[in-house]
Image 1 (cartoon, rainbow, N blue to C red):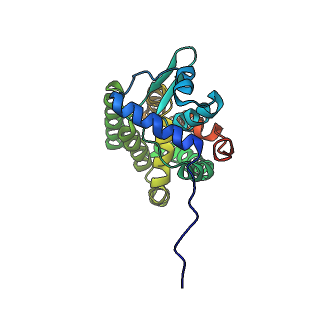
Image 2 (cartoon, rainbow, N blue to C red; image 1 turned 60 degrees about the vertical axis):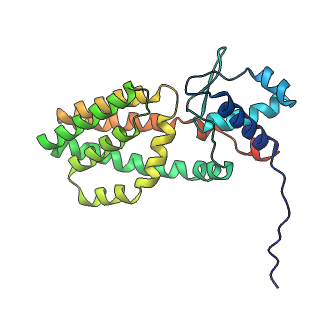
Image 3 (cartoon, helix red, strand yellow; image 1 turned 90 degrees about the horizontal axis):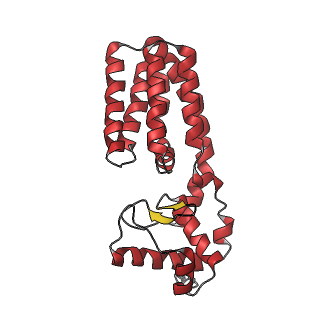
Length: 237
């Protein structure tokens, strides 16, 4: 007879702290841009060490839910604090470098081909994608829809069926890197400017500039908080 009973596990301290912070934000009606209490105040009210509190805050920061402003406190970057399971974060952190390597290999080539082969219709779609992202960013959004549309437009402008198929097959993984990057503070506007540089080079048929601009853009995509995070510091509790 199979035994479906399993040992009861106790939530780790940092998980309990995140749950408390989530409930506090919900009950207080906090929204994007609102400030949370100081670390000292939170530690005293939760009756935990500041080191334990910091571990929970780091997980929230890695997920793009809060922003730590040095000397200025901690602020919400979303309308609620609903973190995903840490195990899922760990798995995404494991596969992220491989996806970024694949993006660099394929998208720099796509930028090169787009600069060589783009049509006026391709340029019109690239411009439309930039307009969409700009509108989203100006409204305080991350601009993910415009970002996705821009990279799809560059891929289409390359007129390479095989590379297009490759990009389609890893679209979900690319979406993860997009979200990680654009959830970094100030990143949406930086990304928009980088997209504009890529578009300008493609328009001018400047192959070298297109490749360099795409490579610089993807280098910034790599600079995400998740890759600096050491999950062992959290799961070790």
